[in-house]
Image (cartoon, rainbow, N blue to C red; front, side, top):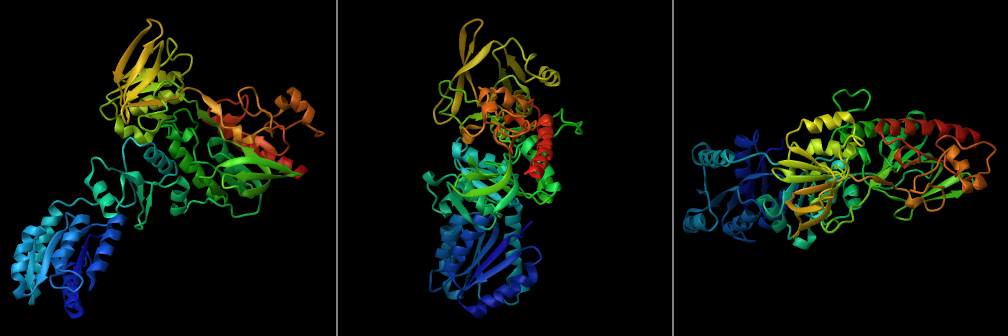
Length: 553
């Protein structure tokens, strides 16, 4: 933990050196001592310290300075660090000004020059004010901080991005938290410039794009090589497994994801049926372990970077990125997985990111405390989300159109839901409307059996209503099934168009698409089993097939 700071300002360099020396001799083990002859410089430093999340315990200033009076300096510093103790250093002739300042700037004490001996005239005073400050001090959060509105889509996307990329952060609600208001005021940040992200080095980004945050955090957004053996698009379980095996087997491997490692599985609060983890593990933990393993094997990871297209040139592929740059490779593994389908009912789009969320959205779980939450969907992801949110919410309602969860959810999850007192399943039901002002406040639930509708209080809606493949970016290059999933292996030749365009002397490999050297793994593939374990298996298998393809070409 960083030490709190004592700031000393005096335009007389000799006096400054003396007071700084005395303070360091007594307090350097517990405090950092910063000293300057310029009040303006001190105010600039104070703002930088505030943005870094540093804590100032004491401001000690001379009264008569050419730039501004000590009282004026303390008044301005008070705006940034209102809880810091304030001591004025003054000559006997300025005691009237010091006494007046006790009311004007809530001065804690004034010291007369000279203060010799310090053991009698300086240290007892400073000890007293610092002990008073320590009595109400709690160590600040050190790291990334987000200042914004609780129910802001942009704030939600930034929190989700940071959580997905495993960066710890603190969210400060501008409407309720004094620290947030102090940071915004000190940096002249208007409502339109929120959310603002404060970095540990004191840097600030106002209403930033995710790419700007990524660059500031040191994430890779530019490919380092001109040519790769294999480029993997998508860092869900399939893509991560492919990256681990690609790197471990010596292939020059590039992994690209538009958001964060883990994909849809990365948002899961608890995966309990994955081999080797009897107590289960979260999707974020699985993603963290996998990306660490892959980078240890030397793979390159770009995030957040979106792939817009793949182009084929002879035996090489060109992967076109969202910034129009291109990266060349010999083989591609498409592991982009699926997205949750949007619920198009009234109010859903209006409150997306402001009470309506797709997937587990664990970053918003704490906002559900003592409120009512609605889960839309009956699959395993919905069940895992319900169990996780039940730890925070007063009541969790699972809204399903069927009679029960039996045909869509694993039995272990159904048993857990049945044994959780604050989870209730609403069968034969659908959520037809979301209501509120600037954020979600109520839902309208319709029972399709009784044809009744009820408007109910709601803190949040989490939607898990099936998935659509993330393949539109591939255009007409590869053959898809009627739902947009990529066809591979024998299914390519069974397709009328596939049998006409496939010109190789051999059949496509099991995970190979209609374009030689482009493979599909995981949920994005037509006919895939939607389980984390099978996605990991296919990702691993895809690298074996890439090896075969490369050896033949």
